[in-house]
Length: 70
Image (cartoon, rainbow, N blue to C red):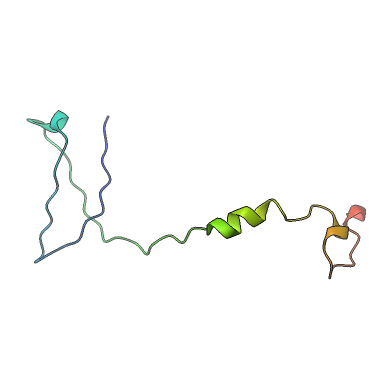
């Protein structure tokens, strides 16, 4: 099964969807829902900093807790 997910703007209460050629002469199901809020993704800087997060309590300057006892 081939599925297409397409986000498009509504203009004058209408949308225009161009389908790939393999859909020609086929019956299709159309489901229309309002688009949810946009997902917020991490910035490149945040992703780069992930590898810098310490895994032992001594790597945290303001953290005096000894997590090795847990």
